[in-house]
Every structure is written in structure tokens, then in C-alpha cells.
Amino acid sequence: MISKKGYTLLVILVLLISTSLAASSALLKSVTVDEFALLPAGLRIIENQTFDVDSGVPPLPKVLIALPAYFNGIQTPQLENGTEIPSVWELGKQFARQYHADYHAIYLQARSISIFALFATLLLSSFLAKNLYGNTGGILALLFASFSPTLLAHGRLATTDIYLTAAVVLSLFVFDIFLRKQSPLNSILLGLTIGLAILCKFTGLLLILFLPIAGVIIFFMQKRGNSINDPEITISKSTLIYGFISLVTVLLAINAGYIFQQTLRPLSSFLFQSDLLQLLKNLTPGWLPMPVPAQFILGIDTQLAETRQVIYETYLLGKFSPRGFWHYYIICLLVKLPIPFLLCMTLATILKPKITQREIPLPCWLSGLPLLHSSPLPGIKTSESAICSFSFRLRRYGSVGLNIFFPERFRKNLMSLCFSRQLLPFAVPLCLRQPSISGPITFLISTCLQAGLKTAINTCWTRILTGGKILLDLKHS
Image 1 (spheres, helix red, strand yellow):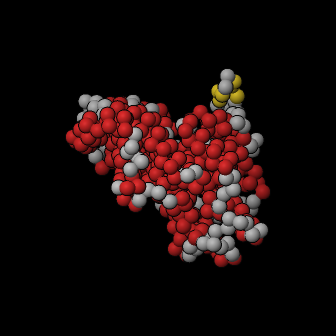
Image 2 (spheres, one colour):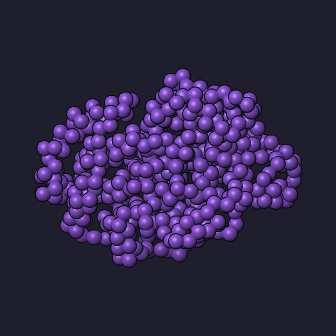
Image 3 (cartoon, one colour):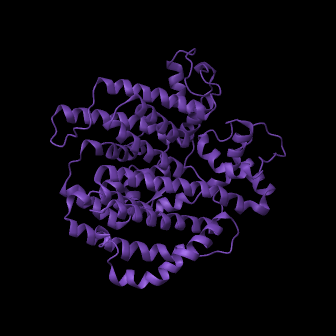
């Protein structure tokens, strides 16, 4: 087993390498089409407290990535045509024209916030695995997550995906605490974290569905007297009360995110584009007040209408489809996740297929996303951010299974092999790229990496590759 000191040192080292990878890539990466519109939309929210532009994306990520620009005096561009509610793309174009001289530098500052979100995601994921499986499990989960191409790609961009992933991991972490110690405080914390996930992206609404399902499964496992019952968890009538407190907290968090604008607006006053919400409107009394802000409901309506009405050609394995493929996420899982992780997950599933009650929320979350994606009913779009969170569940569940299923000597050798022969040779050379671009991130890399990490690696690199003992000696450190 890895000692507490060894765990701390490894976490610091891995997080430093992973975030340095994301930061160095962010310096070179041009502004993407998704980033193009979000930052000016976030500035508009901060300045005018209005949520009418791009309502299909909740406000929290837009506001976070716009904060550095706002504090540096960057303002929302004024459109020439004077449109009251501008298109988000018009806003993005005008922003690029107005600030073309400092355009990349502005987005570098926004990306620094996303890198902090990536840092939090990796740390929380390791903490959750550590709580479930111990120090070794926490380190293995952190290693697989920190060098995931998908997470590194999204953690360097000023988009919504990494924020949703961080909020989902935080929600699962708090839910694990809630299961073991049900109290009003923990139920409020759970509601706040779920609310944050929903304010990052509407995909977070799936937590309201899957976490109760996990609770129901745990309840029936306890009634059947399952051999792997967790004595720390008790599902009773009081759990329903605490769950209701969490739900109320979720509603309050959503309202706070929209500054309680047009909350309790009657249902009859909405003009819906989507068939599903229009059907609900026809079946529900028109006087019924909505407990969430109007722009929140209109944002969901926009997403549903776009899913049903706008045709996005999807390409997979040599075929095109206007409605997607039922096995899309299964293929993405096999393609995007590293082969060592897939092997670990397969071995863990074969050698010990049963899971404990505390593990139930993880497969509930990961198994539900592909099912909703393949459903013929209109649903919330599970985009790349869903793949990030989806990958995290499997990555943590499969990799940390090694802590339980294999002898200690085998685990040590496998960790050393994966880390020294695959991760470090890939990560370190990329960390040491020093582009001549001004800005706070460059300064951080130049001072920290060049003066410290680069010198250390230059002196120890040969020993690490030839010896292969860096992780084997952790137990004795």
C-alpha cells in the first residue's frame, strides 16, 4: 500500500505534469469555434445581468471564463445593427473584430480558469477513489485520468465541458459522503453540487434521475441481505426527507444562478419550440407557476427543439446518420480510453463482477448516458462533456479495482510499467515546450518548469527510464 506521504507526493507530481500539459497546449491552440461565442456571451451576462443570448447553454461556465476579461476592462461589443437580442455568433464576430490585437491573449486568460477546473476535477476524482479503495486506488485513478487525451483536450479550452465534468465528479463525491452520513447539512451540500452541475450544462439534470436510482438499488440490495452490504449506509424513510431537502436546494441553486429572474412565471406565458414541452404545456393548467427562471426553461426548450429539428450528420465506422447511432458511446469508449485502462477495467469486471453499495452510483451514471443517447425520445444532448464524465466513471471504477483484485507485487510492477514507460516519456517532453508568447501562463511555465522541473528531469531522466524503480520504493519512503 502507498503511504500517506507517498500519496501526497505522487498527487502533487501528477497534477503538476497534467496541468502543465494542458497549459502548454493552451498557449499554442488557436481559438476554437465553441470558445468563440461563449466568452462575449459571458461578458454580456456580467454587465447586463441578462441571460437571453445563447440560452441553450447555462450561465455558470460563460461567466467564469469571462471574469478575467471583465476585470481587465474588456467590454461587450456594441453591434452595428443595434439588435436588442443579438445572435451569439454575431456577438462573437464583433468581439473578434473589436479586440483583434489582443484576441488570443484574452482567451488565454479565460483558458486559465478552465485549467483550474481540470485541476479540481483530477483532484476530486482521486479523492473519491481514495475514499473507496485507499491510497493506491486514488493514485491509479489519478494517473489514468490525468493523462486522458479527452480530458486534457477539454481542460485547456474555455468551453463548458470541463466545468460540467468537475461538477459531476464533485456531486458523486458529495453523494458518497451523503450515503454514509445522512444529515440536513450533507443533503444541502448535495443539492448545491447538483445545482452547480445543472448550471454548467443541462446534462447535469441527469443527476436528478440517476442518483435516486442508485439509492433505490442500494435499498433493494439491503432488503435482500446482499453479502457485500455496507454497514455505513442505511436507506430509510428519513432518506426521502433528506432527498427532498436536496431537491429544494437544487431549485434554489438554479434560481440563484439566474438571479431569480422571472421565477414563478405561469406556464401559459411560454411559447415553446419543442414538441415535448408544448405537449406538457397542453396537458398542464396554464396558471401553474414554474419554480425555475424563465430563461432556464427556454434554454431546455432550445436544446430539445435543436435536437429534434436540426439535423446533425454523425459519422461512425464508415457510415453517416442524421440521428446518431445507438452504439456511438460504446465505440467512443473503446477509441478514446487508453488501452491499459481498458485492460484493467476488463480484468476487474471478470475477476470480481460484484460491486459494493458505495460503488453503485458510478455504474448508474455511466450506464445511463448511452441509453439516453440511443433513445428515440427527444432528450438532453449528451455531448463531449458527457463522454468526459462517462470516461471518469469507468476510469475510476476499473483502475482502482487493481487495489482489491491483485497481489501487491503485481500492482506495484504494473504501476511502474504504466507510469515510467508510457506516461512520463509522453508527458515530460510536451511539458518542456517553451513557446515565445507573453502572458501569465507563459510566465508560470518559464519560472516553474524551466527553473525547477526541467533541471530535475535532465538529471534524473536516464535513471527513471533505466531503473524503473520510482514507484516500487514508495512504500519504503
